[in-house]
Image 1 (cartoon, helix red, strand yellow):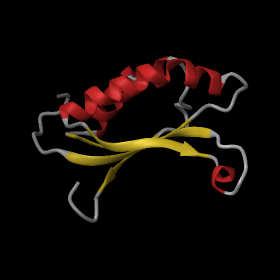
Image 2: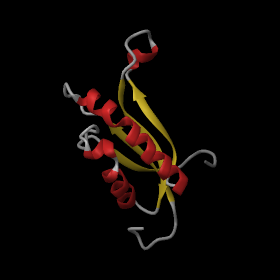
Image 3: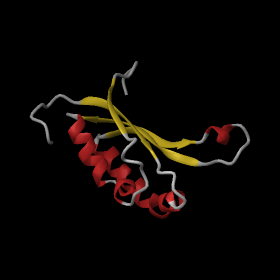
Image 4: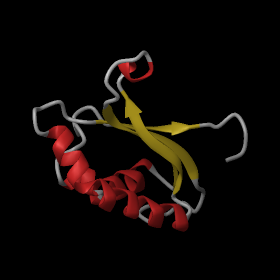
Length: 112
């Protein structure tokens, strides 16, 4: 762990995709590797739940479009979360818009 604290905290990660013309194709080309990596992070206890964000039109009859990722994770610090995000294929392949990514402490209303 990157922190001297042994207390684990929950964090919400908001990771929108880039919007350039090739972003969706990049996402789909590495999606299986991304999902496999998150299975490993779940097994470690880091990933609590998460999934793809959809465009608003996806639920109103429009084209179903993936536009990013959101997840709840558990770690000792924001720095630890960022380190794990930096190893994700969506980060390294240029899928997520790193300028818009947000990692914030999260307090669940019930145990996860």
